[in-house]
Length: 82
Length: 261
Image (cartoon, rainbow over all chains, first blue to last red; front, side, top):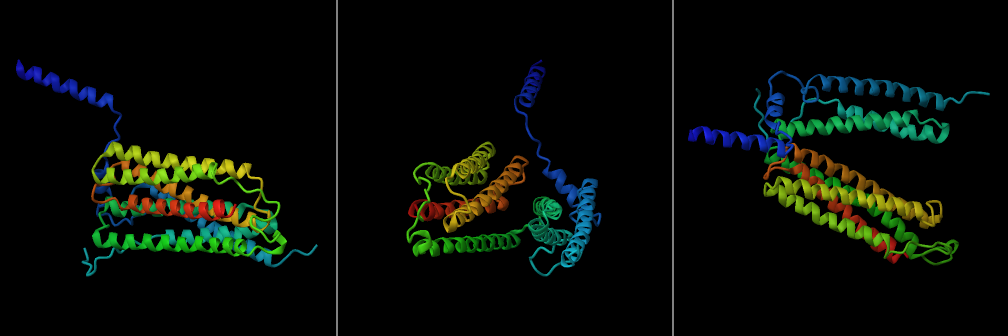
C-alpha cells in the first residue's frame, strides 16, 4: 500500500516535470555515436543524406560559378564591336 | 587505426577551402562586373557560395570537436593561438582606418577650411546616441562575462539568459547605429570627413553583426548541451571577439565622435 502510494507520488512528479518545462533534449551522446561510427565517411558527409545534398548543391554552384566567371572575364576582356 | 606521433589534429580531406576560394573569386569579379556592367549575378552567386561554405565548414569543426573529441588540450591551444592571431590581424585592419582619420584630421587641408571638423560639416552630438551606444556595448561586455562564469559554473539557465541578453544588446546597438546613419546630416560622399566616418564606423558595425552572429551560434550550442564547464572554447573565442569589437568602438567614440567633433 505504501509502495503504491510512493509510486503514485513519483508518477505525478514525472508528469508535472515534463509538462512544466519544455526541455530541449541532450542529444550529444547520440551525435557522438553517429560521428564516431567507423564507416569511412569524411566529416562533411558523415551526418547523413542531408550532408550529401548540401554538398552536391555547393559543388554544383562552385563548378558552375567557376565556369561562369571565366566566361564573364573573357567577354569583359574582349569588348563587342558596335 | 594508424597512430599519430604528434598531438595535432589532422582533419579529413575537405572541399570547403576550394568552395570558399571560388566564392571569393566570384565575389570580387562580381563586384567588378556590377560596377562596369550593372549585373549582380556573379556577386550574388559568390555570396551564396560563401554562406554555404561558412555554414558547412564551421558545422564540420563543431562535429570534429564536440562529437568526435578531436579538440584535446594541445589542439585547443592551437585554436586559441589561431583566434588570437586572427583578432590581431583585425586590429591592424582597423589601425589603417584610424591612421587615415588622424592623417586627415590632425593636419586639415585648405580645401576643408584648414579646420576639423571641416567647414560646413555638422557633426553628431557625442553625448546623445553615440554615448548610449557606448553604454550598450559596455553593458554587453559585462553580460558576456556573466555568461562565461555561468557556463564555467554549470548554471545552464543563467548562461542562456546572460548570453541572450548580450545578443539583444548587440542588436540594440546595430539598430541605434542604423537610425544614426539614416538621420546623419552628412554622407559618405562629404569629403574626407564622410569617408573616414562611414568607412571606420561602417566596418565596425559589420563586425558587431559578425560578433552577434557568432554569439547567437554559441547560444544555440549552449542550449543543445555542446558546452561543458571545462571545455567551451567556441564561446571563449566569441567572447574575445566581442570584447575586441567593444574596444574598437571605444577608440572610435573617443577619436571620431568626441575629439573629432
